[in-house]
Amino acid sequence: MAEFVYPPVIRAALTAFKALDVRLDIRGAEHVPATGGAVLVSNHISYLDFIFAGMGAYKTAKRKTRFMAKDDVFRHRISGPLMRGMKHIAVDRTDGQPAYDAAVQALREGEVVGVFPEATISRSFMLKKFKTGAARMAADSGTPLLPVVLWGTQQLWTKGRPKTLTKRHVPVTIMIGEPIHLEPTDKPVMVTRKLRAVMSEMLDRVQREYPAKPTGPADSWWLPAALGGTAPTLEVAEAEDEQEAAAKAARRAAAN
Image (cartoon, rainbow, N blue to C red; front, side, top):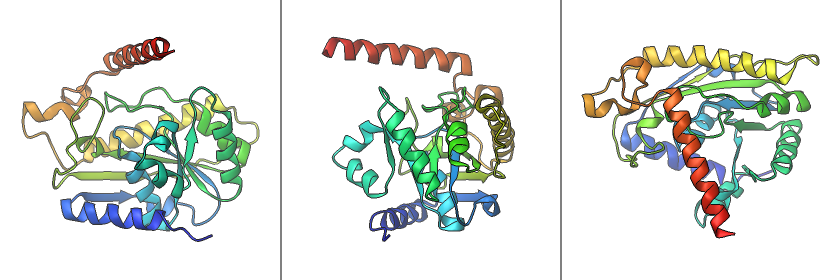
């Protein structure tokens, strides 16, 4: 079936990256399956991660990733038509089963489905706890998990920071790990633990090998506290997430 939206969006993104001299470093391209379904699992440190995580699979194997994203994005007057045109999957957080079923069906039909198992952006830029949905989808569809780690995207646009979409010369690393094939007896919880451990090692490597350093104390916000930066620790970031979730729940309750 012809794709009328995805290719132009990819071309526009590549044009923008070239204009800004975003220095893409895609590693592990050989791990992207040429055909068949796969659950692409990425860490989440930026609002732009779906572009970069999908770019890794597209530039290397011409695979178009169908990302699962909250339905708010699909209701936006600009992003909504684009998301639907690219056949991404809307997730209603009050009832995620329809989105889950749609994702499993897409996987069985040979699509690559993108998942952020942390659910929300990590303010600490380290891996948060993983939800088990990706492992369950892989098991139910009989497809592999494809771990992907991003680094550098947080410098462009992340939670709690102003957009810096015109920032030039930002290095962005996209590392694609070996597919993880599940056995029928594998438990989703154990698979998720293995997946997180694999991605933690990958993230540690790309952080250590990242070519850019903060230019000074004011620029160290994008570096994790464990690496000497001023990003919040996992514990502090988790507390901030809980406060934000409670505030949103209170606003919804007041609106009703």
